[in-house]
Image 1 (tube, rainbow, N blue to C red):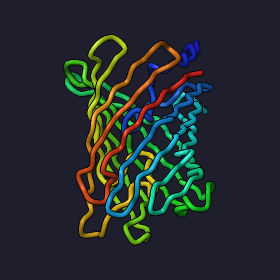
Image 2: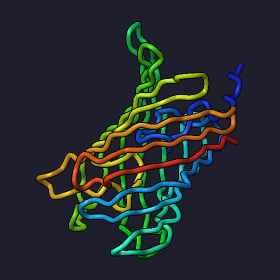
Image 3: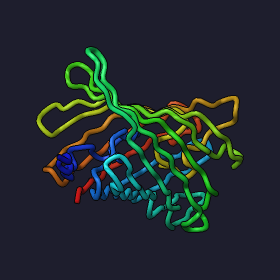
Image 4: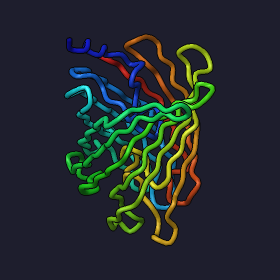
Length: 253
């Protein structure tokens, strides 16, 4: 007998825009998530200015283990001295769930994700074609703590606008503090899992790589269909936006 189809719920696998790393899990076949962050603000860095974005992430379960995704930072307003308003490029993304297993003292789920950021957007925000390939992993630790991390390589722009290929790491620890309300801490090295800044994680000169950001946030699951989330992170490096604040929601169909 064939297994029963997986139900579409925002509780599992949960929103990917909520924190820096992306889950290793994929939507069930035919499932749809629409995630958005209408309030995304980032501060200036040594080579970028303040910026506002209305981000969107569309996710579709092609099969139970393959997810097609479309991401954009959406409406983008860049502050002075290079003020501009327009739409950030589209990013085409795919996530594949590879394997899940449990041992007596260790559990894991592993996935593979790849994206290509296109040049389809407002010309001012065209940063060329960029890409990323990451391994996504999830673990459930003692005391109900969820540990999620991504590691891979991303094509980024350095402070001169030259393309470089760099290792990137994103991580988050999350725990429910009351039913349906979770808090998390998060961070990244060199880039977030999705191109969430103008330069998809602009970096400094080669000798000053390893730019970090750390922060905290929340996720509130209102019901099986809707979750809201928000976070605030600060920079630990000159070439990372001095702060990144987000507020958004995810809807499951």
